[in-house]
Image 1: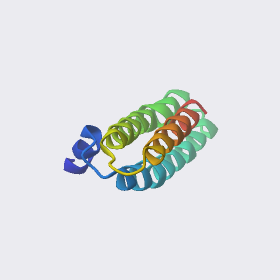
Image 2: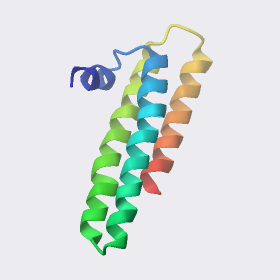
Image 3: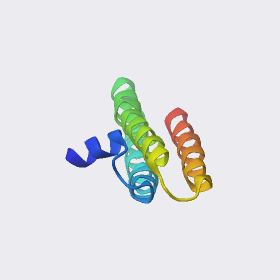
Image 4: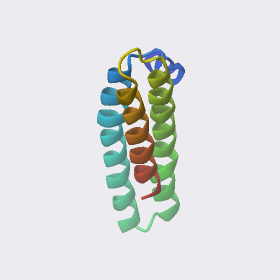
Length: 99
């Protein structure tokens, strides 16, 4: 839980927040919830599918996005990398959250 708190506050280095939490974590969380969503839909469990598909992935996507955004604000390297991390994370998480 401490790692999520550090992510949320933007206390993690930008490469760690972006690659570990937004990219790797985003793929794992969204892949698992998507598969679960499809399995539940095939069993006509619509409400459960919506809960699993959105109530689990969307909060994770929000935390990862906020964490990357805040970490980018503290990044001391080239500004373009921080800006690119923000753009890719926001776009990717929006795409994963609405599809």
